[in-house]
Image (cartoon, rainbow, N blue to C red):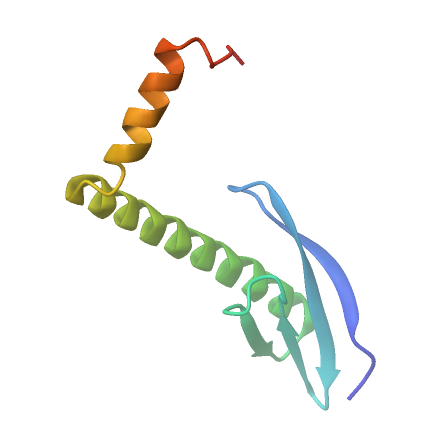
Length: 100
């Protein structure tokens, strides 16, 4: 295996930059994003590998976002956020909030 290269890739929708680690492994290329362990792949060329990493990164970010939203809705419906809501309203009424 050759030395690991670290390249920045950006998700255009979430506008976040990640460090993609890529390495030539014989006749193929492997790549992964340590910050998002679910994202790893192997391709025949470096160009296809980088494209696949960007696509898998975006798919993973969308899946995480959707899971978070579903959990939030579930917690909201179950009343798990009621105490936070009450505290926020009390702080607003007490003048403890500032306009951003």
